Amino acid sequence: MAAFTKVNAFVADVANGFHDIANDTIKIALFSSDPTASATSYSGLSGELSGVGGYTTGGITIGNKTSSQTSGTYTFDSSDSPTWTSSGSPMGGTSFRYVVIYNSTSDKVIGYYDYGSTVSLTSGNQFAVTFDASGILTIA
Image (tube, rainbow, N blue to C red):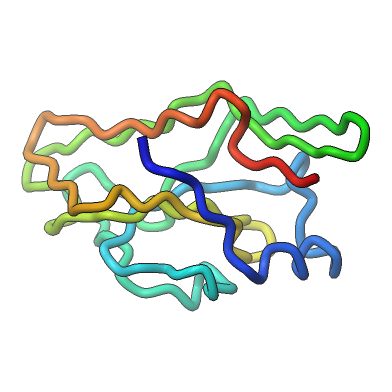
């Protein structure tokens, strides 16, 4: 499983009120280009898969969100396992390596998973993201 990396700007974005994770629309999208830890906005990223072969530009909404705070530690999680199924041509017409989580409401990037090498899906195959058992994101 790929490790989650929060982008550097996320902490300042939280402090400046750009995220209401419990109520905002949080999405997950597939990219071929490295978003790096310095990414700030979803619209500023390049390399997202094109909208063909079963992939919709903008990604999919993370459902079944949960958030909690205990003794000063905040945890954001979801019981979803976002899944894409390639149909027709290879999904996106290309391969991807990065899975970006972003706040669609504020256009701010939260973080990403780097799968370490490119992933290509041929027609009929699926790609699913399984979140870490301790949550998608923890802020202490």
